[in-house]
Image (cartoon, one colour):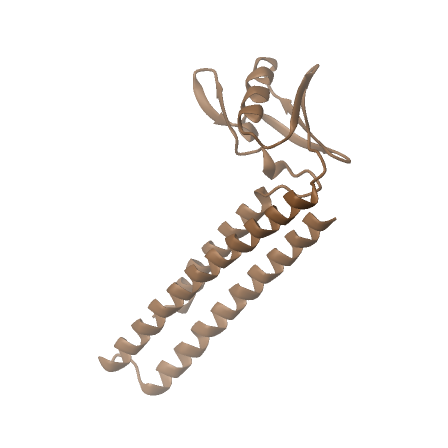
Amino acid sequence: MDIKAFETRLQAVAEYAKRELGGLRANRPSPLLIENIRVSYAESEMEIRQLGTIGIMPPRDLVVTAWDQAALAPIAKAIEAAKLGVTVAVQGNIVRVTTPSLSDERRKEVLKIAGALIEESRIKIRMARDEAMKSIESDQRAKLISENEKFNLKKKTQDVVDKMNKELDGALAAKTKEIEQ
């Protein structure tokens, strides 16, 4: 049982959860909200981040500056089609995306989605831990590792799980604070 490989596997789960949390709409605009939206442009599918830069114009606007003027209309159309509950307008050489403030109902809904996302990640982590523990047990039964090594590996495995869960808790707490502002 390789602890480093196990940690890398769990880190990937945590990173995925953090990326997904970043895409959830909070009261402040975030480029993550629109950067992965696919746009049909020049006979191909591209993400907005591949077509221009995304900036924030406080308090509630995102601004997309396309590298090619011809991409502005397709970018605006793709953002509208994503049904994010935002207002999109092409203004000169930019696309302005205005995010309305969240209603209390929508805020609770987003918090629930964030909690479910983190719980899903915790389940994946628990499943990986259970697999690792079974592997350690079978290695010990096959006399590949000693009893002491078994307990050490189990402790290290649990330490990695605890570390990842703490990371997920921190990400959820940060997102909750951001949503409630």
